Every structure is written in structure tokens, then in C-alpha cells.
Length: 186
Image (cartoon, rainbow, N blue to C red):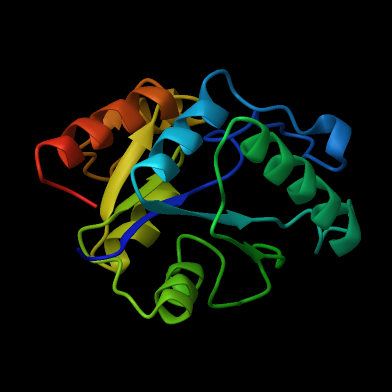
């Protein structure tokens, strides 16, 4: 069986987002159902990967150590729910830094492909913002929107063609699990 990969954006998909940025482990709070959704996806064989723009580092709002502590809290919460994260990829740059990794560019997703030696073509990439969906389309991934975080705004205002949207990560996971049981997807 081919390796199953799913890529999730972090803020607004896995945890509550903040216009003031998530700067400490105490500020990181999972969205209802997101930890069990990750656990259920991992249980059926998905390698769950997180790809997240974290310009708060470039803006001086948090350090790489702060971000590591936030991700340690996220990982502990996923593990407590019975799940596992295969990897976390970050873009620490600001919007004007001209990097190749900041979504909507495809660099983070290409790093996932390189790391796992697998294409993301037709594999689920989940986000709550147009930049997530654009990055997904650039690698031929299956762009999936959740309506948590910025998702409702993205759905209402996006010029991006949104083929799949779900109320939250838990319902998206239900859909992917159903597909897997029927022998499709992943």
C-alpha cells in the first residue's frame, strides 16, 4: 500500500488562531475535536504533517525556542489523544522576506515531498486560508478547506476555486476515513 500523507496548517486548523500570534505554549489551545481527528487519521495509517507560516519569529514576537515549546505542547496533546505527528515544517520568515517557503509559495510542501520522498499530488493538504489552498494547488495536492479559523472568511471571499470544504478538522477526518474504508484516497 502506498504511503498515506496528510498535511495540515496549524493555526485555525488544529488550534485557535490569534491576530496577535500564538507566542507561548499557554496561548496554544486546540480546536474542539482536532486532537482526536489527528489520532483517528494516524490510526488508519496517515503520516500527519504540519506546515505552518510563523512570521512571529521574523517579527520578533517569539523565538525559535518559544516555537519549539509551543510545538512540544501540540505534540503532547496529540499523543495524549492517541495520535502522532510525523513532522512539523515551519516558515519563520516575514511576508516581505522573499523566501520560497512562505505559503502561498510551495517551498514548505516541497520540503515535505523531499523529506518523505513522496509526491503530494492528489494527497490532502488542509488549511483555513487561501494561501494554504494556493500552495496545495502548486504541488498538485488535494486542497481541502476547513471553515474554522479564517475558513468562513476564505470561503466567502476567495477567488480561489474551493472544491472541498468541511466545518472542521474532525468532519474532514470523518470523510477521509470513510474514503479509506472504501479503498479511496490518501
